[in-house]
Image (cartoon, rainbow, N blue to C red; front, side):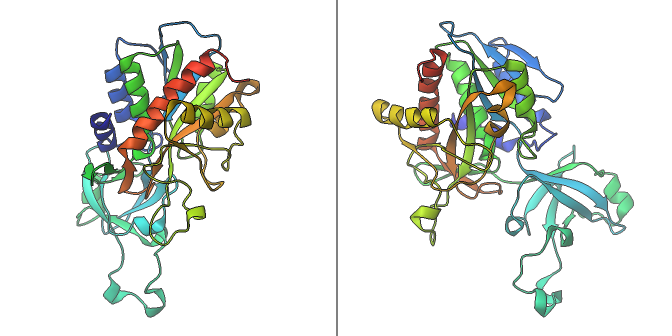
Length: 342
């Protein structure tokens, strides 16, 4: 799965601009599934399993990543921008980026410290005061390379860290796409829908449309979630920890998860020797927020990968947790297909 994750993370595709990710996913599943692409750009893939299920199960991951959109080009050739998705202002300044369809290189800049007023020194600059510098001499030259409405992305290599960790942009949620591709490649025990979704980072927009069309009885939502297990953070505030397994949520800001499914997943981890943990905070949200209330209600669970420095150019995750998410998903698919969790 690591090679697949690397390939997907190095591709660019923010909300509404998922074309490159979609093309790669379609290339990998060609001939293995029945595919529908809906008007929003979701990939709805029906995978024939070894057996027919009693209940319809939908597995999902979103293709989009956080990024930026160009809003204005100044007379001097600098690019003003807005975030696409939730990005902390602190992780933006000075980052190299690519812009537009031609992957024009640039740097997110701001006024030099030597020119900064004393009152502003030490403060995190607002996005409105930042710009992207692509080396253009004027507006006309910049417009030869970039247009208003173009997307911009962090530049970040995929690197191995230590024994078990990897660093990259867009681990949220290319890890979910990676797990689903691996499951499709290796075959599934029951017929199931594998849905690669769009526009999660700007309001879970693809998820509702996909759930409306598939009409599942159960849904497994793959995600990456914040791991705060870093220096200076108390255990209770760490949310989850790298190396301690798949994260199963009981509640976030968009969903109160099915209590029976939550308990079943935690117990299943113990029984099957799969490392499983839960979040220690009610925070964040994911496509479950739209899926669980679609079509009169869907029994939904989120299986997430712990991820440090999420929504930045340098997210860090543990490969052992990737395997735990993959293994847990396979077990959950079997249970839900048989309607075994009452």
